[in-house]
Amino acid sequence: MKAMLTSFAAMAVIAFGAYYGLKLYAGFESDDQFSSQDVRLD
Image 1 (cartoon, one colour):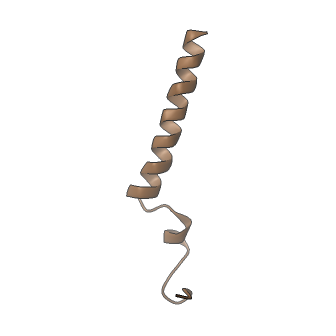
Image 2: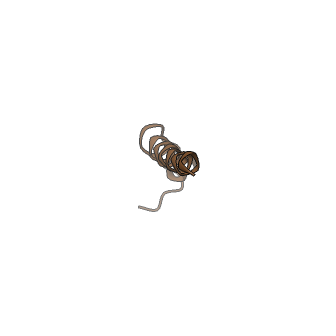
């Protein structure tokens, strides 16, 4: 039981870390990937 809870906690930490790492540092948001100056309606 302890190993299962530890693995769930590790999985959550890895998932949140990957999400924020790709979003903030690597520029993998959909806004960064699929927008350009030609299609923006600012």
